[in-house]
Image 1 (cartoon, rainbow, N blue to C red):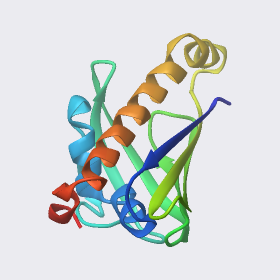
Image 2 (tube, rainbow, N blue to C red; image 1 turned 45 degrees about the vertical axis):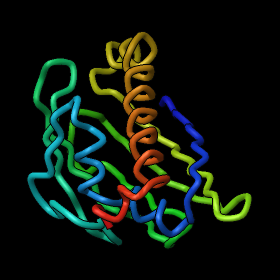
Image 3 (cartoon, rainbow, N blue to C red; image 1 turned 180 degrees about the vertical axis):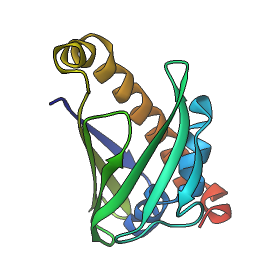
Length: 157
């Protein structure tokens, strides 16, 4: 199973970064390229413990749905979402936050997934899917960083 780990240093307090990372509205903003929409469960605001959201998005030219639940929640240090239903065989996304350097936050994403279709899925994981997922997460984090580091966050939280 591939695991993608991304660390992003953000010049903003840990509480702000934590809340932006669980914002349905910011997620939608940061995924414009895949036309993501929250269509069931928590569809706006901040997702919290045991809450679900179902996303509809266009990946690889096909509209797909992905439902996740927040399985762990320790504000403002971590939360984990796990796939309930979707295109992957399994998917877990750990979000970790650490205060560093006088008001800055290190945000760490640990994204583990398994593609369906047995050996064909494994081939997809290693030839293009892992790189595509990493690019997707880096873009989301870039947007979160931009919003957190200026006044844009006030319109979201």
